Image 1 (spheres, rainbow, N blue to C red):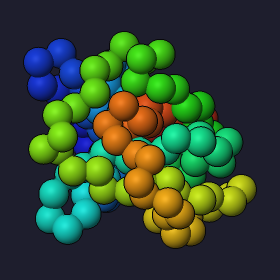
Image 2: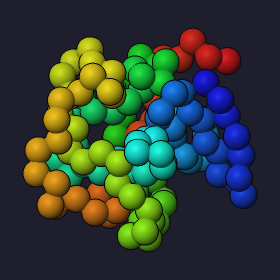
Image 3: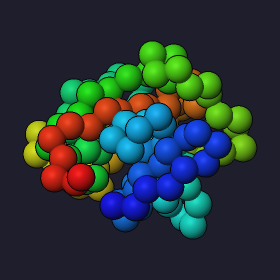
Length: 122
């Protein structure tokens, strides 16, 4: 895991996934896809999605928040949405999750924020 700071916002990333937020174990979920970082959008917030994100990042479980609950603003439309509506099953990490169903109802207002717990990292 790598951690960096930018203007009071902390980002931690593992491979092609990162959390951008207030602490290294929480934040807006962003994924590297097609050569650029973009957000992860989800409008139905399945309970396995935050766990899948956190499992990939080296944590054991996760909690999902909306941008508003976390205190972040939606990004401008020029920032891509890398993944839409991931369907995850228990025990899967993020990139093992299934296909994205309907993409049309996702925008940056539905970008997800997760908080991860149960880390081996110090």
